[in-house]
Image (cartoon, rainbow, N blue to C red; front, side):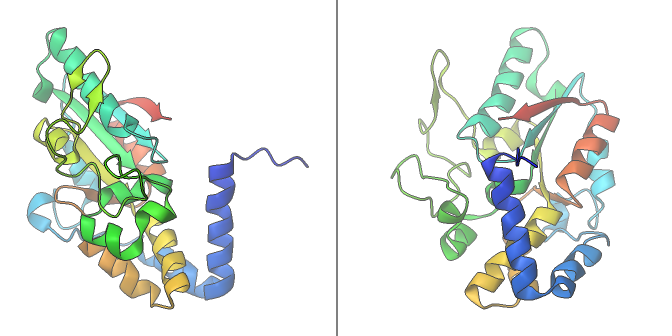
Length: 235
């Protein structure tokens, strides 16, 4: 049978297989079983409740609602498109904060949910093939967290504020896939000869303020649509 999976998907599946073989099926399955329990956000003051991802989605009340499904880094698009959505709705009569925008970071896009410390420690730029736009080298920081003025320009629009913190200030909601964190942290731990549970714990401790962990990205896609969000794949 011909293999029709795209390279990024084949790479993800091969990492799962490699991690399972190296760590043992039981050890890689256990984190998934644990992730079925309520996920406790490290900054409970910024979460909807003590790990209640369903309650987090109750914030979706805007006149116009959209969910951006981000499965890979995809350059600036995971952040430029939410901004364009807000700008063009504002231009047609709906102020930014009267819209609801959800961005789901899953699969190979999960590093955008983490602080700079983790990018440097785990070399996310190398792992996920993300270059720093300033240095053109593999990123050792989150390039979309608190960017400098003028860092990002869109032809025809000029300078745009598309940092995660800037988008959050406009009401954009960000969440991250716990299932992907479980897999990638386990594989990372195996490669670094570390305890998978400790690496996963470290990753959770390094989530950006206001980023909500969800059981899985596909779960979040469904929940967002149940709350009236129209679907947009970022690719």
